[in-house]
Image 1: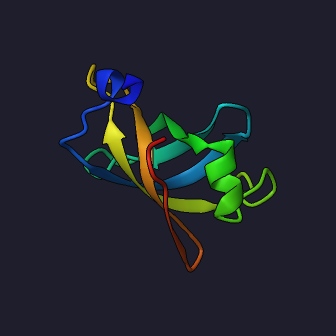
Image 2: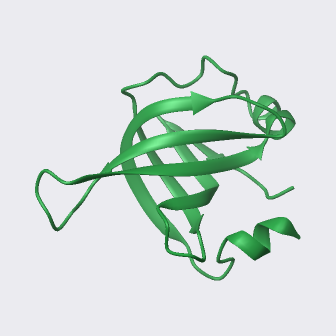
Length: 104
């Protein structure tokens, strides 16, 4: 499975940040999330996060207008194995909705 090669399936990281951009494209959408550093005041890291397939998102009621730049998102991700600020979203909190995203 391609996901296992790129992301660490045995580790989960929770991030909270401001949505910079939503790329709603096939086969997988991606989110650019600006995450403030908890240790260094004023430092922000932009993470590139891959989501489940567009069809999975649509079934969960998410479309290209569901998330707006500037919104605060909380995500649980499988981090990139290479240590880059990238990951695969397992769970997404959007307002009061908690959306589980299966790997497909």
